[in-house]
Amino acid sequence: MKPDLSVSFARLRFRTPLIAASGTFGYGTEYLEVSDYEAIGGIAVKGLYLEPREGCPPPRIWETPSGMLNAIGLQEVGIRRFIDEKMPRLRELGTTVLVNICGSTVEEYQELAHILDSVEGVHAIELNISCPNVEEGGILFGCDPRMAAKVTEAVRAQTKLPIIPKLSPNVTDIAVVARSVEAAGADAISLINTMPAMAIDVESRRPRLANIVGGLSGPAIRPIAVRMVYQAAKAVNIPIVGIGGITSHEDALEFILAGASAVQIGTMSFVDPSVWRRTLDGLEAYCERHDVESISALTGGVLS
Amino acid sequence: MRRDVKVKFLERRALSPDASLLEFESDFLANELRPGQFTMLRLPGDDGLLLRRPYSFCDTDVAAGRFSLLVKDVGRGTRALTRLVPGDEADCLGPLGSTFTMPPDGKRPVVVAGGVGIAPFVAFCRALSSVGKVAVVLLGGRTAHDLYLREVFEALGMDVRCTTEDGSVGTRGRVTALLDEALDAETQLYSCGPTPMLLKVAELAEAKGVPHEVSLERRMGCGMGCCLGCVVYTSEYVRSCTEGPVFDASVIAWDRDPHPL
Image 1 (cartoon, rainbow over the protein chains, first blue to last red):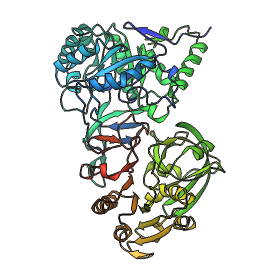
Image 2 (tube, helix red, strand yellow):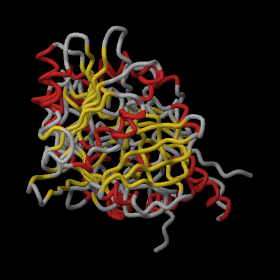
Image 3 (cartoon, chains in turn brown, blue):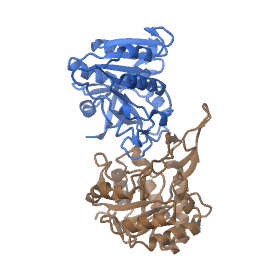
Image 4 (cartoon, rainbow over the protein chains, first blue to last red):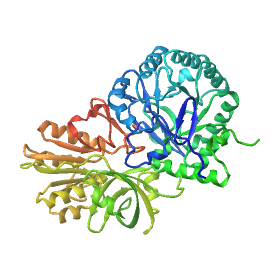
């Protein structure tokens, strides 16, 4: 019998445990020609504010050892254009849709959640409280357990949709933040967002990014992410979505064994659009080889 | 239709101490790509690189199922390509991006290129040649060996004019010096090259009211319109991988785009 690779948690069902990470998969349809969408369990769309945003000036990206440094600054189309122009095609994909939202104030998060609550085809809200590249909001909410809880609680009051706060690695103790959003009503948590980082061109003596600092993603941050997923999983009872430099089924399994119910893939999707099928096939072969009937059975299965 | 295909490296032709023309085999890309488009290329195996790198297509041979890239050694990505040996495979995502448009009837094409900015114009001039059009091709470089593929443009019947900063070939000075006399109301301009050159070219074209298409080179993360790393400012930030790399130069807000690679 084929192993069951679908996962269900937080009142959501994902046909595979592989979710496209916010900010790396546009508004969902960009990769239709080159990626196997059957292998993708869900899509977290680019972070949205109430209004469109211009983003940071270029240069916005720079490659570092096994990593990608970016300061895009949440260039996005705003919630209205998203609903009118992007949502119809996203609905047609028939995948699980997580809408990532961001605000400079608690009220903005609330209003976004209120609007999304009645939008057909939106399955969950991912709360972006961890973007390192915006001046207000973003990471400021995610680094303070009380603020993280305040945003989560405020959004909770506006929607019946599952809420998944996306946490920053830039904290002293991830367990504290995780417990704090759990108590505030989060249905699951996703982590980690990018790691605040910087690179300098020594010839010109200028930072590589116009924003000076950016967020580091890719395999370079994976061990940090696995550690944080492990610590968060020990601290809370809600499900965890693991994120950070996943390139293969082995990487995905590290997160799952550390305590993740599903994972997100971001940077590697830029590098290899076939990462979805390749990773899913790898997970299936692993389950068969280890007599695992359902991928969910592996969550938190690391031995100690 | 875009695809991620395995292509076979065929041969390298050194054009200068730091630039080469690389030939690859792929029926799909040879057939599908249009002048101005690019590919996101990646070499298999762990060569210490993570992201793909964007390269403009230089030329194609549809019958032979071949295409070429003009690559100058500028960093880790291009250096990795120097290790390719015939028979090696590479992953090419493409064809990507916008294309040059053919000049309307009655307009004479003028091409201006600096250094490796010449790359996308080989295929473009081949297309012009196939419909009996002759472009004035202005090539600029620091010295003689920077004037890549001059003989290819001449063989295509183009009207090639050169400048070098050291005067070793053609007129001494910058390529923009030749532009003024080449442009008039009946011309349409196409450009690609270093940003300071493009700024000057755009200024001249605008002053003369000459329609101008420019191909911009930017750092790119995905090439598919998702990472938003390659943006250029118009009235907002637009993606050079999807809205570009070929733009109507009049929409570019050059003062908002001091983009060092």
